[in-house]
Structure formats: C-alpha cells, structure tokens
Image (cartoon, rainbow, N blue to C red):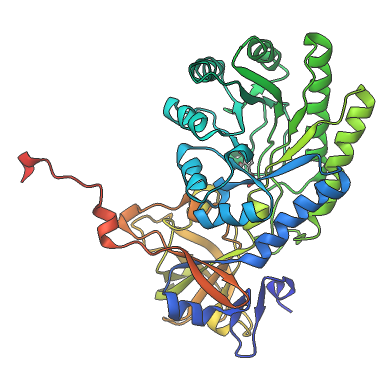
Length: 444
Ligand SMILES: Cc1ncc(COP(=O)(O)O)c(C=O)c1O
C-alpha cells in the first residue's frame, strides 16, 4: 500500500484516481483547471479541534489556539478558524486586513513581526487587535505613544529568545543565539526590555512569547522551550515583581511531506501538546507560579497536509544518463519551497494513482530559472503529457509564499467539503497582472 493511502485526506477511488476530501482530483482539474491548490476542509477542522480540545481537556480551557495565518492566509481560512473558536496570529497589515474582511474578532488576534511598520501598528490599534508581540524597544516606544493618543492601554507580550536549537532547516530555526527574532534571555536583553515595557503607561505587559522554529518533530525541543520560558517567568517575577499571566509558545510542529517523515496527523499531535502542557504545569509547580493562560500558534500542522497542488504534465525531457524532467504548468511561483529550502515532497499521478512507480523523475516548473523545481526525486509511473500530477502536503507556505514571477498567475484555491469544491481564492486574470502598472506620460 502506498504511503498516502493511509491518510484520511487522500485515497485512490475505484477509477484509480486520487481523491481529496471525497473529490476526484481528475474531475477537479477538469472543472477548475490547473495549476490548482486544493484544500480539504474536514482535515483542517480536525486539526484545529485537536489543538483546541487538548487545551480544553488538559489545561482547563485556560488558553487560546491561534491559527498562524502566515501558513495560508485568505478570508475563508479566517472564517474556518473563527468557526472553530480559534484566534489568529497575523504578521502584517495585509494578513490583519484579510482577517478583518472575513469578520474575524480582533480581540482574538495576536500580531507578530520583527519589524512591524508604523502604519501596521496604527492599523492594528484601529482594529482593536487583542495582543501585540513586542520585538524591539523602538516598537514599544511607538506603540506606547500611539496607544496614548488613542487613550487606550494595549496588551502586549514580549518575544523572547530562550536559545533552543531545534532540528530543522536553518532558515526556519528562530530561537538560536543568532536570530533576528526576539530578545535573548542569555545576553540580558530580555530582562532589559521587560523593565522597559513595564514603565510604559499605555502598554500592559501580559507575558512572553517564544517560537523555536518550524517543521520540528522532537517533542523534547518544545518541552525545553517551555521549561526555559517558565524559568524566565520565574526569574522576572523574582527580579521585577512582574508575574506573566500569559505564555505563548508559538507553533512549529512538523508534518509529513515524504517517505521518512513521521505520519502523526491528526491525533498524534495530541501527544506533543500533552508533553508541552505537562512541562508548563511542572514548571509552574516547581517555581511556585500560577498557571498562565496558554497560547499556541500552529500553522503548518493545521493546514499543510490538508492541501495538495494539481498540475498538468507538459513537456517531458529525458537527458540520458542524467535525468528525466517532467515540466508542469506551475513551479516556483506557486511553490518556492524547493528553491528556498530544498524541501522534499511526494507526488502522485492523480489520474493514474493506482499504478506502481516505474521511474524517478525531476519535476520542473515553467519559470526561467534552472532552480525552478518542485524536486528531483519523484517516484512515478511513466508520465505522459496531459497527466494530472498532484504534489502532496502543499497546504502551508505555498499559496502564502506564491508570487507572480515571470508574470505567471498565482493559482486559484478551492476548498473541498464532502466531495464538493468551491473557490476560496479566485483565478487571477491578465488584467490583475497589470492592474498597478503605470506608463509615465514621457514614455508614451
Ligand atoms: C511567531 C510564529 N508563530 C507561529 C508560527 C507558525 O509555525 P508553524 O507553521 O511551523 O506551526 C511561526 C512560523 O514560523 C512564527 O514565526
């Protein structure tokens, strides 16, 4: 049995076609065209519930799960997160605007960013964003002054960097000593900013935030991070008298992309959360702290395995003794992760999903870049022009990282529920591509 057969989201139907959420991928490709992002709503909700229910059942509901919308941000995603009782983590004015357009409750939004711009912070206060995570002293100054002008007191957390090395790609590690994120605990910067923020009249410090990185499978990394954050809470209580009432431990749980990755979704994530919650409880007991409100910010694990991308196979180039390339109608403009991190993926011929693999091929995009690949080692049956290729686990950091490079269209996205698919992101048009272009009069 092939790997993906064991997953709830995906199966091979009686026609030998790949199905996602009850929808036949060949039919989706015929109906909506390719490239196409396809998301399984049931899976997204299942994952959200694993997080929400674990906090409910193992932490007396004293917390809030924030969907890290950088993983996949569009209005429908905020609507789904809201309907499941989640909050949202946003990292830009654009994500915040999208959430607001979807009617998301601002109070349940946490805003991040290592360089939030003045207009983004002002907009956040205008919207009434619940919590802002401070990542620089200058930001605390600016936030305090604009909160003062509005005669409000803004809840804030401070992003600390406790110095945890997690086993993942260097670009997605965020809590090592050399990081652009957060205030280092070891160097004393974190203590300094705590004292600084506590003096601000229009900021109410609620606690600390820490996010160690992404695509992490070692439970111990999360546990160590929780322990270090609680040790810092205790240290600050002792040194400054301030006891955090909120601790946000970020996201970062890994997902299955390809053979060799653990397949833990969806129920297996509970073990991670239980270990984390136990570490928080133990830390509080050991230091004599009251249990803080616990925030978590999963992104990739909520939406990553829920999504696939459908392409049509175009030109096939066999270079004897070197490699066979299947070119598809997408590429780094809809999925830049191979170009960025040499990310691994699994691909399936969606219209011939029951067939055994016969060869190893590279999948190339259509951009003018040799590095425009989805990957180089895909085990597939002998593909032909016109076959529908599904790349799995593309739900996170694909659409959200997409671009119009080479003036290609960012593909549309559909959400599938019980076999029915609807657009959640409509297709772009040529007019969209030139919408903001201007030819100065002197060039006409
Ligand atoms: C602050 C913060 N929270 C949450 C996340 C979500 O992480 P993931 O998608 O790995 O769960 C990220 C992503 O890097 C992040 O920077």
